[in-house]
Structures are given as C-alpha cells and as structure tokens.
Image (tube, rainbow, N blue to C red; front, side, top):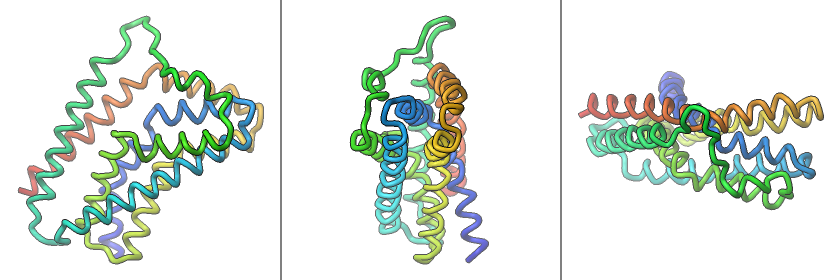
Length: 225
C-alpha cells in the first residue's frame, strides 16, 4: 500500500503544485495582507481557501471513485484524461493570446481594488470561492481525484493522498499568511514584490503550467487506451 500511495502522490503532485502556483490567489492574499485587517483577514482567507480545497477535492474524489474500477481496464478514465488534457492545452493557448504586450500593464480585476479593506468574513468567503469555484482549480482537482480513485486506495490512504494534495496546494496562500504574521512589517516589501511579479506574469505562468499538465494528461490518456 505504501508503494501505491507514494505513486499516487507522485501522480497528483503536478496538479497540487499548479494549484499552489496559480497567480490570482497569491495576488489576492497579498492584497488582503496589505490591508487594515491583515492579522484577522489573512488567516480567515487561508482558512477559507483550505476549506474550499478540502470540500471540492473530497467531493470530486468520491464522485470519480464511484464511477471508476480501481486497478481495472477503465477506458472511460483514459478518455477523461484525454479530454482534460485537450482542455488544458486550449486554456494554455487562450492564456497566451491574453498576455499583455511588451510594455502594457496587466488589467487588475475590479474586485481586487478593495482587498485591502476586506474583513475576516469577506476574506474567508473569497478564499473559499477562489479554491472551490475557480474553473482551473476544478479541472486540476479532477486530475488529482482521477489519480487517487484509479489507485484503489483504502479510506486511510485516500485521506492521506487528499491531505497531501490540500497541503501542497495551500503552501503559497498559507505560507504568505505565516510569513506576514511572523515577520510583521518586514514582510510587506517581499510580499508586494511577489504580488507584482505574479500579476505581471499571470498569463505566462499559467500558460506554461497548463501546457505541461495538458501534455502530460494527454500522453497518459493515450498510453492507457
């Protein structure tokens, strides 16, 4: 079981890292941490993010597990990987066409302009929404859930795999909060620099992540047929 669990964690690692490296949640949490309610709103955002990720990943794993034959010849799952792989490649192409030209300043969503005034309640809801209702996160969670369901793990193994996925997917959000709480005002500058870098390179980062994941899923799906 340990070998199977390790293999499953290896399979879901790319999806978990892609969730963690998604620029929008990083920009959002840094915006919240730069506000007047940072010490309460920051942890609330992180709690909402983790709760949203736990909820959606658990629900998807249960759904996929109910339609998968663990260890069997499941062509349906291979076709699902192919479909998600093609979707990721299409999303990568869209991100690339949306990238800002040379000296152009990326447009910031209007809802981000008021993040520095967000209280704990709004921050928690925003964190949960970005984790659970983001289409990219849902697609990434589907790929991780497929890996877990396909492995045929027992309840403990499934819970551990889900925990690893959530922990890795939350490292940047929770890490930003922990850094701010530990370093105080000294955290402002490095967090602001990270926020700016992520905002400026959002399209390029997501293009690369989606391209790599799309190619991997497409290859895995084709190899399984």
